[in-house]
Length: 156
Image (cartoon, rainbow, N blue to C red):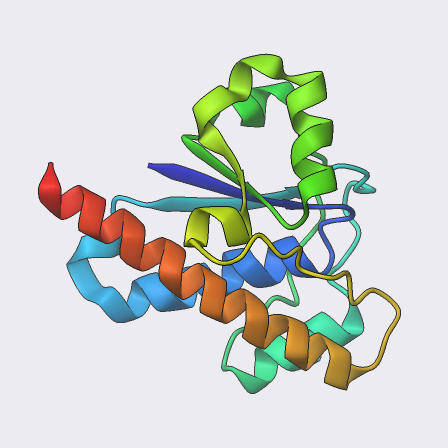
């Protein structure tokens, strides 16, 4: 299964979600090896690094995203991903409008996690504290998503 996390610029939320999912899957052992992860942005400038605050917050969790380079969301990624998780309902609407065939593989992160549909607010340009809060929210949602996917895999 391939999961794509999507935000606006692919320098904050989506890369943090990808990195946290990778860490969480690493903690699960063998069961997570069949899950591939990526991230992209709807308005990403190719090659942009993760924001300084995102790098700092992830480093505090033992995650190095210093080599991350932003990538734009493409039709090829839309086709190859089995699950596309956006940070906001607006991101989801934008993708559904551009790629109406995405259908049942397009959700907001909160929606797929079973949370009360809240958007993950954009911390871009704000303090490390705001990024830390965002990362905690993303971690909680990603943990629920990974748990759900692994539970579904065990039922198959």
